Length: 138
Image 1 (cartoon, rainbow, N blue to C red):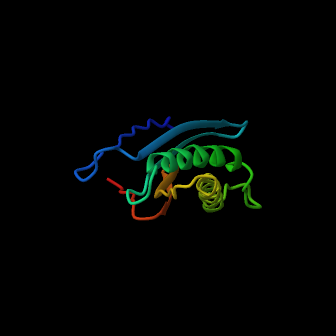
Image 2: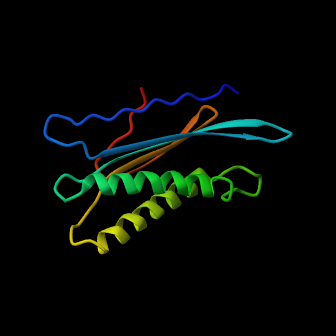
């Protein structure tokens, strides 16, 4: 199994004067007596421009997403030992959403963000998205 290399970049676009994007990536390695796996975890969030402090929402969401994936990736396994990536990604989105809502409720400003997250393992990629941000396979 070849190691994974990740690259990330955001762009302000043509419409905005400030970048409300946040991006995070992490490479994890798992080794047992039977195998060695390399995981790539990626997330990008784009703060909602119509709301205040989109950059705050996107930063909170990306941090919580990565945290939740790393905490749960080995907790959701099937009977045959395979990781249930759908459940891991769903839990990570739920954790990020909960965190953004908690911050939003404690501020006078409403905040929100889109989110696209992915886990890469072997020759597979598992993707989740919320909102109008998209993931592309190139």
